Length: 117
Image (cartoon, rainbow, N blue to C red):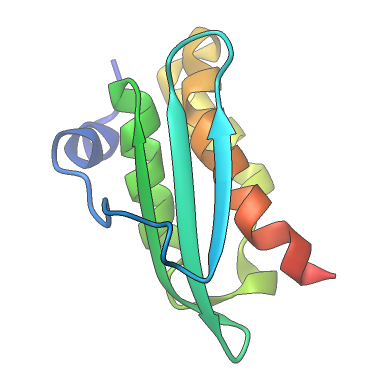
């Protein structure tokens, strides 16, 4: 069972809205299931001032997308360490469901990482 903080984000997602009009968009899908996430971010002066997601999927996928929106907001791009997220959240949900969390992380990576270069 997911931890209560992740269940809360799955039940009551924050920052879930249309992202196609946002400046930077990342997309990811899990080929093993129906999880699909689109992430949008807005960056000003190197700081992520807004983050949102749209998509469909299981509770872990939606909960992690919501949680990651809160994690990246108001951070400089270089201070966002997404590589730690699947492992940290994956430990709490179990190895078999880590892919559900990974979809959201991948969408964020595709939005953020190209702008770190």
